[in-house]
Length: 263
Image 1 (cartoon, rainbow, N blue to C red):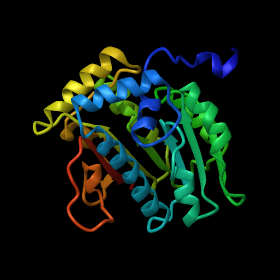
Image 2 (cartoon, rainbow, N blue to C red):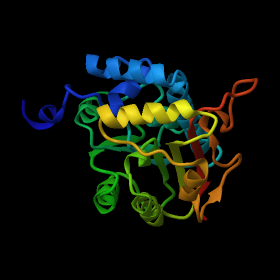
Image 3 (tube, one colour):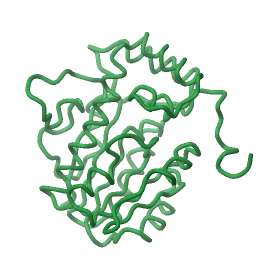
Protein backbone atom coordinates (compact mmCIF):
# COMPACT_ATOMS: atom_id res chain seq x y z
CA UNK A 1 0.00 0.00 0.00
CA UNK A 2 1.11 3.54 -0.67
CA UNK A 3 -0.09 7.01 0.20
CA UNK A 4 -3.21 7.43 2.30
CA UNK A 5 -4.13 3.73 2.34
CA UNK A 6 -0.82 2.80 3.95
CA UNK A 7 -1.70 4.94 6.98
CA UNK A 8 -4.91 3.05 7.77
CA UNK A 9 -4.43 0.78 10.77
CA UNK A 10 -7.15 -1.87 10.93
CA UNK A 11 -5.54 -3.70 13.86
CA UNK A 12 -6.62 -1.18 16.54
CA UNK A 13 -10.05 0.37 17.04
CA UNK A 14 -10.31 3.98 15.91
CA UNK A 15 -12.73 6.62 17.12
CA UNK A 16 -13.96 7.73 13.68
CA UNK A 17 -14.81 4.17 12.68
CA UNK A 18 -16.48 3.34 16.01
CA UNK A 19 -18.53 6.55 15.78
CA UNK A 20 -19.57 5.45 12.30
CA UNK A 21 -20.64 2.07 13.70
CA UNK A 22 -22.66 3.64 16.52
CA UNK A 23 -24.48 5.98 14.14
CA UNK A 24 -25.49 3.20 11.73
CA UNK A 25 -22.73 3.48 9.15
CA UNK A 26 -20.85 0.71 7.38
CA UNK A 27 -17.28 2.01 7.33
CA UNK A 28 -15.64 0.12 10.19
CA UNK A 29 -13.60 -3.01 10.82
CA UNK A 30 -14.43 -5.97 13.12
CA UNK A 31 -12.02 -4.57 15.72
CA UNK A 32 -14.06 -1.34 15.79
CA UNK A 33 -17.35 -3.20 16.23
CA UNK A 34 -15.87 -5.27 19.04
CA UNK A 35 -14.62 -2.19 20.88
CA UNK A 36 -17.84 -0.32 20.20
CA UNK A 37 -19.91 -3.14 21.64
CA UNK A 38 -17.69 -3.32 24.72
CA UNK A 39 -17.97 0.42 25.31
CA UNK A 40 -21.73 0.16 24.90
CA UNK A 41 -21.78 -2.53 27.60
CA UNK A 42 -19.99 -0.12 29.94
CA UNK A 43 -22.10 2.86 28.91
CA UNK A 44 -25.39 1.73 27.29
CA UNK A 45 -26.29 5.30 26.34
CA UNK A 46 -23.26 5.85 24.12
CA UNK A 47 -25.23 5.39 20.92
CA UNK A 48 -27.70 8.01 22.10
CA UNK A 49 -25.07 10.65 22.56
CA UNK A 50 -23.40 9.83 19.26
CA UNK A 51 -26.74 10.41 17.55
CA UNK A 52 -27.46 13.49 19.69
CA UNK A 53 -24.17 15.03 18.60
CA UNK A 54 -25.01 14.42 14.94
CA UNK A 55 -28.48 15.92 15.29
CA UNK A 56 -26.97 18.91 17.12
CA UNK A 57 -24.75 19.50 14.09
CA UNK A 58 -27.79 19.59 11.82
CA UNK A 59 -29.75 22.00 14.01
CA UNK A 60 -26.77 24.32 14.44
CA UNK A 61 -25.99 24.40 10.71
CA UNK A 62 -29.63 25.04 9.83
CA UNK A 63 -29.67 27.99 12.23
CA UNK A 64 -26.40 29.36 10.88
CA UNK A 65 -27.20 28.97 7.19
CA UNK A 66 -30.77 30.15 7.73
CA UNK A 67 -31.34 32.73 10.46
CA UNK A 68 -27.69 33.84 10.79
CA UNK A 69 -27.02 33.97 7.04
CA UNK A 70 -23.64 32.21 7.24
CA UNK A 71 -22.35 31.04 3.87
CA UNK A 72 -18.95 29.63 4.86
CA UNK A 73 -18.19 26.64 7.10
CA UNK A 74 -14.86 25.31 8.37
CA UNK A 75 -15.53 21.82 9.78
CA UNK A 76 -12.50 20.45 11.65
CA UNK A 77 -12.54 16.86 12.84
CA UNK A 78 -14.99 15.84 10.16
CA UNK A 79 -15.21 12.15 10.86
CA UNK A 80 -16.45 9.63 8.33
CA UNK A 81 -19.14 10.91 5.95
CA UNK A 82 -22.65 10.11 7.13
CA UNK A 83 -26.16 11.36 6.48
CA UNK A 84 -26.64 15.12 6.64
CA UNK A 85 -23.02 16.21 6.54
CA UNK A 86 -22.34 19.91 7.07
CA UNK A 87 -22.30 20.81 3.37
CA UNK A 88 -25.52 18.91 2.69
CA UNK A 89 -27.41 20.70 5.45
CA UNK A 90 -25.98 24.13 4.59
CA UNK A 91 -26.40 23.84 0.83
CA UNK A 92 -30.04 22.76 1.08
CA UNK A 93 -30.67 26.21 2.55
CA UNK A 94 -28.00 28.14 0.63
CA UNK A 95 -26.72 26.27 -2.46
CA UNK A 96 -23.89 28.79 -2.76
CA UNK A 97 -22.47 27.89 0.67
CA UNK A 98 -18.79 26.93 0.82
CA UNK A 99 -17.58 24.19 3.16
CA UNK A 100 -14.04 23.10 3.98
CA UNK A 101 -13.61 19.83 5.88
CA UNK A 102 -10.44 19.14 7.87
CA UNK A 103 -9.31 15.80 9.29
CA UNK A 104 -6.06 13.87 9.63
CA UNK A 105 -7.47 10.35 9.59
CA UNK A 106 -6.55 8.50 6.36
CA UNK A 107 -9.80 6.50 6.18
CA UNK A 108 -11.80 9.71 6.56
CA UNK A 109 -9.70 11.32 3.82
CA UNK A 110 -10.31 8.43 1.42
CA UNK A 111 -14.08 8.53 1.90
CA UNK A 112 -14.32 12.32 1.92
CA UNK A 113 -12.69 12.66 -1.46
CA UNK A 114 -15.22 10.28 -2.93
CA UNK A 115 -18.39 11.30 -1.11
CA UNK A 116 -18.25 14.92 0.03
CA UNK A 117 -19.43 16.52 -3.19
CA UNK A 118 -21.44 19.71 -2.95
CA UNK A 119 -23.71 21.76 -5.18
CA UNK A 120 -22.51 23.35 -8.46
CA UNK A 121 -23.28 26.79 -7.01
CA UNK A 122 -21.20 26.25 -3.87
CA UNK A 123 -17.91 24.61 -3.14
CA UNK A 124 -16.79 21.72 -0.95
CA UNK A 125 -13.14 21.01 -0.20
CA UNK A 126 -11.19 18.68 2.09
CA UNK A 127 -7.89 19.28 3.91
CA UNK A 128 -5.62 16.60 5.35
CA UNK A 129 -4.42 18.49 8.42
CA UNK A 130 -4.27 18.44 12.22
CA UNK A 131 -6.39 20.71 14.40
CA UNK A 132 -3.28 21.80 16.31
CA UNK A 133 -1.56 23.11 13.18
CA UNK A 134 -3.63 26.29 13.17
CA UNK A 135 -1.53 28.26 10.68
CA UNK A 136 -1.57 25.46 8.10
CA UNK A 137 -5.32 24.92 8.51
CA UNK A 138 -6.10 28.61 8.05
CA UNK A 139 -3.74 29.04 5.11
CA UNK A 140 -5.23 26.08 3.26
CA UNK A 141 -8.83 26.94 4.16
CA UNK A 142 -8.24 30.46 2.89
CA UNK A 143 -7.91 29.09 -0.64
CA UNK A 144 -11.61 28.18 -0.57
CA UNK A 145 -13.08 30.47 2.09
CA UNK A 146 -12.90 34.26 2.35
CA UNK A 147 -11.63 34.67 5.91
CA UNK A 148 -12.49 38.38 5.82
CA UNK A 149 -16.16 37.37 5.83
CA UNK A 150 -18.02 35.42 8.57
CA UNK A 151 -17.23 31.72 8.89
CA UNK A 152 -18.83 29.04 11.05
CA UNK A 153 -16.06 27.10 12.79
CA UNK A 154 -17.34 23.58 13.50
CA UNK A 155 -15.46 21.66 16.23
CA UNK A 156 -17.71 18.73 17.06
CA UNK A 157 -16.13 16.10 19.25
CA UNK A 158 -12.58 17.04 18.25
CA UNK A 159 -10.98 19.12 21.03
CA UNK A 160 -11.49 16.06 23.24
CA UNK A 161 -8.35 14.74 21.55
CA UNK A 162 -6.20 17.66 22.78
CA UNK A 163 -5.27 16.43 26.24
CA UNK A 164 -3.64 19.58 27.60
CA UNK A 165 -6.25 22.11 28.71
CA UNK A 166 -4.17 25.19 27.97
CA UNK A 167 -3.32 23.96 24.49
CA UNK A 168 -6.92 23.08 23.68
CA UNK A 169 -8.22 26.52 24.69
CA UNK A 170 -5.38 28.24 22.85
CA UNK A 171 -6.10 26.37 19.62
CA UNK A 172 -9.76 27.42 19.66
CA UNK A 173 -8.87 31.02 20.52
CA UNK A 174 -6.33 31.23 17.69
CA UNK A 175 -8.78 29.86 15.16
CA UNK A 176 -11.53 32.27 16.20
CA UNK A 177 -9.10 35.21 16.31
CA UNK A 178 -8.35 34.68 12.63
CA UNK A 179 -12.04 34.80 11.64
CA UNK A 180 -14.08 37.89 10.86
CA UNK A 181 -16.65 39.45 13.21
CA UNK A 182 -19.98 37.69 12.77
CA UNK A 183 -18.27 34.31 12.67
CA UNK A 184 -19.61 31.54 14.90
CA UNK A 185 -18.12 28.70 16.92
CA UNK A 186 -20.04 25.40 17.10
CA UNK A 187 -18.40 23.04 19.58
CA UNK A 188 -19.32 19.78 21.30
CA UNK A 189 -17.37 17.82 23.89
CA UNK A 190 -17.85 14.69 25.98
CA UNK A 191 -18.20 15.55 29.66
CA UNK A 192 -17.66 14.20 33.14
CA UNK A 193 -21.00 14.19 34.88
CA UNK A 194 -21.75 12.98 38.43
CA UNK A 195 -25.02 11.45 37.25
CA UNK A 196 -23.31 9.44 34.49
CA UNK A 197 -20.46 7.50 36.14
CA UNK A 198 -20.57 4.81 33.47
CA UNK A 199 -19.15 7.35 31.00
CA UNK A 200 -15.89 7.40 32.96
CA UNK A 201 -15.56 3.62 32.67
CA UNK A 202 -16.20 3.77 28.94
CA UNK A 203 -13.59 6.49 28.44
CA UNK A 204 -11.04 4.56 30.50
CA UNK A 205 -11.62 1.46 28.36
CA UNK A 206 -11.25 3.50 25.20
CA UNK A 207 -8.00 5.13 26.28
CA UNK A 208 -6.54 1.74 27.13
CA UNK A 209 -7.49 0.03 23.88
CA UNK A 210 -8.27 2.63 21.20
CA UNK A 211 -6.75 5.53 19.33
CA UNK A 212 -6.52 8.47 19.62
CA UNK A 213 -6.87 9.03 23.38
CA UNK A 214 -9.65 11.34 24.50
CA UNK A 215 -10.09 13.74 27.40
CA UNK A 216 -13.28 14.40 29.32
CA UNK A 217 -13.98 17.85 30.73
CA UNK A 218 -16.68 19.23 32.98
CA UNK A 219 -19.58 21.20 31.49
CA UNK A 220 -18.04 24.34 33.06
CA UNK A 221 -14.73 23.63 31.34
CA UNK A 222 -16.50 23.13 28.01
CA UNK A 223 -18.20 26.52 28.44
CA UNK A 224 -14.76 28.16 28.66
CA UNK A 225 -14.20 27.53 24.95
CA UNK A 226 -16.81 30.22 24.34
CA UNK A 227 -15.11 32.90 26.46
CA UNK A 228 -15.27 36.25 24.67
CA UNK A 229 -18.09 35.14 22.38
CA UNK A 230 -21.80 35.92 22.50
CA UNK A 231 -23.23 32.57 23.60
CA UNK A 232 -26.51 31.79 21.88
CA UNK A 233 -29.45 30.45 23.89
CA UNK A 234 -29.75 27.99 25.55
CA UNK A 235 -25.99 28.15 26.24
CA UNK A 236 -23.74 25.13 26.69
CA UNK A 237 -26.06 22.20 27.34
CA UNK A 238 -26.51 18.53 26.57
CA UNK A 239 -26.46 18.32 22.76
CA UNK A 240 -29.90 16.76 22.88
CA UNK A 241 -31.22 19.92 24.56
CA UNK A 242 -29.76 22.53 22.22
CA UNK A 243 -32.89 23.86 20.50
CA UNK A 244 -34.53 20.43 20.09
CA UNK A 245 -36.98 20.24 17.22
CA UNK A 246 -39.00 17.22 18.33
CA UNK A 247 -41.84 17.60 20.81
CA UNK A 248 -41.41 16.32 24.34
CA UNK A 249 -38.46 16.21 26.75
CA UNK A 250 -34.94 15.59 25.47
CA UNK A 251 -32.88 13.18 27.55
CA UNK A 252 -29.54 14.22 28.98
CA UNK A 253 -26.46 12.84 27.19
CA UNK A 254 -22.79 13.08 28.14
CA UNK A 255 -22.01 15.21 25.09
CA UNK A 256 -22.40 18.95 25.66
CA UNK A 257 -22.40 21.62 23.01
CA UNK A 258 -23.08 25.25 22.24
CA UNK A 259 -22.92 27.95 19.61
CA UNK A 260 -21.21 31.30 20.10
CA UNK A 261 -20.99 34.41 17.91
CA UNK A 262 -17.91 36.60 17.50
CA UNK A 263 -18.83 40.25 17.87
